[in-house]
Image (cartoon, rainbow, N blue to C red):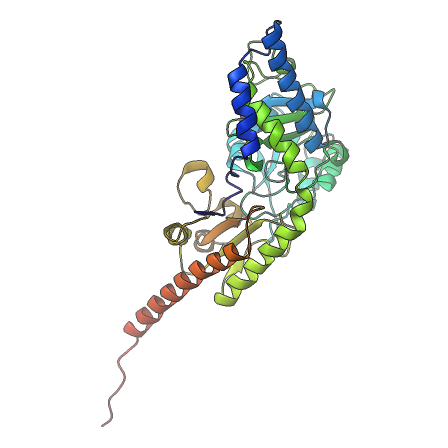
Length: 381
């Protein structure tokens, strides 16, 4: 299987599996004071330092969670009834966690409207929360997070950023960006599923989502997932060393898009005019549903995704593309191809071949339908 769905979940790294296996064999509760417990605690704290290094944060600012969804919920529920502003293209875990939030519009290229943010914050008193993702999971479009943070802070807001897709693909500096809260997830960078982190700026008072024990400085109760956290730490350490590969991956992505558009000149690459993650292509084949495209690729042994499939297991029209101003038909025709470090030229050719076969097959059907509906030609007298 040719795997081109890294934005949904990156393949688990062998080094991660090895480290987690050793940790599971050792066992121990990191809250215990005996030797085994202290070893487990040391493993957790080493991972905390590794995650902090990737995020450009301090180790004491890292709070481990069960994943990005919990971290997002924790950030948005941590300030009582504070008004919340989110971009219209956020991940479902943000939109569902703040269903009454004001949704900020984005441009046709998927970039948050900064003027709209300024106007919205100008009408609000108190201390609101602004939550904008670093990079979109469907289009790969990168947001001007530092500029958003400056404007939001000037209005007295708390700033949260879902950086799940950006981590390991962009150099991230939590402190330099001026953020208050930031979400990370292990399985997007080759770590295990079911573990993530919320980076909480030192000195920021946050109400815990889960109460019980005093784990994670009292911000997230429950015995830590030691093996998962260790795997997360190993994945972040490896991912830090791979950010330099961005240009190479971007060149392959650009070659892929050029090849697909040569085959289908009417294809649309969404967000192409904006800064994007180097590995991500969101492209639509007009007249062909995303579900049909995903199935065609799957039959050829290539894994891609469409719409919001990562959240529900179902292919639905993208709310992200609708927010960018595209209609339901176009939003339902898009697929996402997300590459990894192992993607090579042969893989690009294989993707192009499947795309070509589907395009030619569907265009032949369209031509037959058009001819069948044309009025009969007059015969000569």
